[in-house]
Length: 205
Image (cartoon, rainbow, N blue to C red):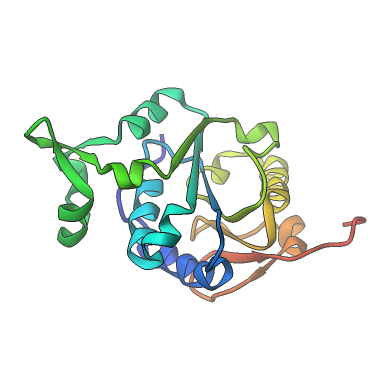
């Protein structure tokens, strides 16, 4: 299992949201896909950041599709309950606002319903090369692609490209640059993070 925690790669996620919001403001439905979400630290981090930046109306129109191949990990995401030890990186103002003690037990906390309601959970294999659905405004995939063979990595990234709406954004691990074969499908948006925008490519590519 990949090592992850709440608010990991915060700068990268903040940059993604900064570029995302002008693209989706005013929409009646906004879809994000967190592919390889493990136990839910990252999709719930995204949910917190978006709740803080979208406003109440916009946030109600958000769907975060969280997927992973490991079904037991998804059970943790669905339960949305985490020991206090895993929540120490959560900024105190967010912790007070978005987590509540489980049955009065201050050793375990559950993500509040406002965030849980935005999650759509999928048991999904990226190597099926089929997306969980389409028309995503943002796809986030970290700590997964590095485990694939180079040819598989290219095909998964092409799948993400297909799943994104025109102008949609793709974020990957900051240590993982796009394979050369996938470069024609995206344009980089920033110099200090692996954040890209989908571009249309000729059918022959």
